[in-house]
Image 1 (cartoon, one colour):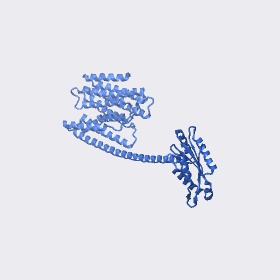
Image 2: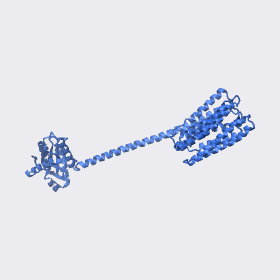
Image 3: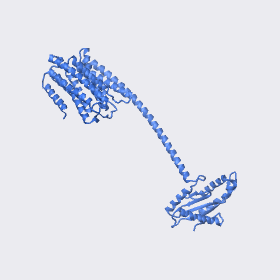
Image 4: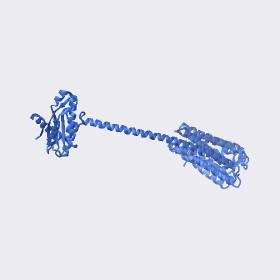
Length: 502
């Protein structure tokens, strides 16, 4: 256990217990508070010198040290005031110098907290933050007025310098902790905010004077509040010494409930003042409620506008995404169509549109592997060269396209007609077809004259070789060789017919 932290805890607990039991020694209170502030100064100063801190963090802790020095100067002046007249009211509540130094030190702490970078990403976030500050400041002023209930306008300084600054410090500490950018640990923020709340409790105790035993509780709360701040700083220092990652940025909450809590407190105090007929407080509470309500409504209107802007941006993004997806789908469709065309060109004849030699060979091997009476035919056009020589290649191309259509009409849909060369065609018959009948149809269909527009009538013949797969057929190449031999048998015999391989 840390010695300084242990001393602060046990010493504070002992003194608070003595005051709660009825100890009545006002000068001792301020001596204890001065000792506490000496500890606070030492802790803040040593924290500012810790290795690994960024320049903004060092500046923050130096400012805290300066605030502690201001507090200590006020403590020393108050010790003298209390020693001269221990039973005077200012001996317990603080003289003018002590009140000024307390206000200056607290204001310095508040300004230091307000200048800590919150990591806002836009101007709107900064505006919302300052509107939250204004809302809480109004609520703090109402709370401070209720605690002090001054009878003279001059007492407004006491309200603004006391509870308002302390409560505003609580708000800023909470905001820093929630934003994940606080220059201190979460435990430090919670303990420090609790100390400020205790100090506000001390002001509430002294609201109706310090008679009737309230002096002891006022002094106990005062000591506990100052000690709580020193304890918070020491806890922070210990945590940073053990693990510097305790100050790593945390995820920020997208909203803050503090302004709504502040306005709720304002209306609560307004209700209490009306019920108790607190005439000095009712106008202030009413004005605070009106101002804080206006600030919250304005903030909500800004939030509505921001939400509308974000929804508009979201709608634009969704529309852009939809257009991108449509474009992507169109691009993919174009890619698929291009791939299909490329695939078709790779496996089909460009002139007739029939499967080419590669696709025919692939289908033939697949049919042989599947088994059954598969037949392969090779067809060579007779006298085709004469057509090219007489009318040219354009006429020959027209003739080839017509012959391709006639051959396709001679077979079933599950069979294949392919162009494998200049005037050479091949047919694959799957099981169930009669090779002789198909070959006979092919010969007759090819022999029919072809009318070539602009040229005349052309006639060609067909020499067809047929080979049927058997038990010893191992692949398409061997079957095609047998069909080729049969075709040349027809050629040698006079063309215009078909022959089956043995």
